[in-house]
Image 1 (spheres, rainbow, N blue to C red):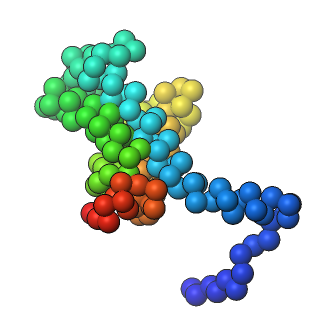
Image 2: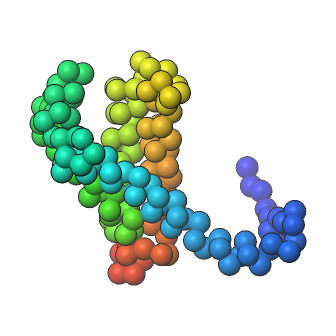
Length: 156
């Protein structure tokens, strides 16, 4: 289906048009950075023992639910969350990191949280599935202009 747009939609509050225009370039970097920033503490918890977590505890949990080899996977998950999150914030190697994050969050949603139902308040899959969708959007869109990928002029 080919849909042509001859002009941008008019804002409901015309006085805000200038503000919207000034801030619109920051919407994508905000999505990418928040996605990365919210992933990093989960990795820090696993890798560095911050906020009461540790790698052995993570590996033990992985082993209980049948994710093997548990210890290497725990390190991979922690590294993807922490270092991958940092790379998303910076916008460096954005698409492959976002693809890895998408896979990680889909596994979390369907292997760990699915049995708890949809709602996150019950440990359900809505939260990891939301992060998987955001990461997938980043795979589709790339880093955008406010990124190290754009700065160096290279993108995977």
